[in-house]
Image (cartoon, rainbow, N blue to C red):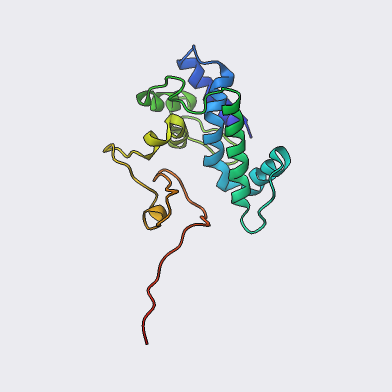
Length: 178
């Protein structure tokens, strides 16, 4: 399942020859994994358990999957590897061009856990631009995921994310007095 991120990185280092292949992979892999994770949670949960020795959260395997992805990103950071495209000097306005080239001008999709076309690649390329940039909408305003807008917790996710389940999300309901 790594072929998708590998192909996406080839476009990255093709457009930015100063970016080493491994550096591009370390910047893209965590975002790709977070994007496709909800389509095969058990695979990523097993990855977290088998590679990072995380405990399996039986009630919510997504927690285990995301912990494994985070552990990978933390490992890359510990090696001094980049984990954002911003660290690599990639300009946001080149993202669509990378996605177009990777999809042969929109004519091909990359198969894998979930099929990736141009729009999906634009989202994935945009994720590792840095957290603040990922939160900005077209009007350059911070926009949270719809579920997060209603939540009182401070772990807000971008509107670009699909929140499958959140253990912290709580809806306060007023109790009617009798």
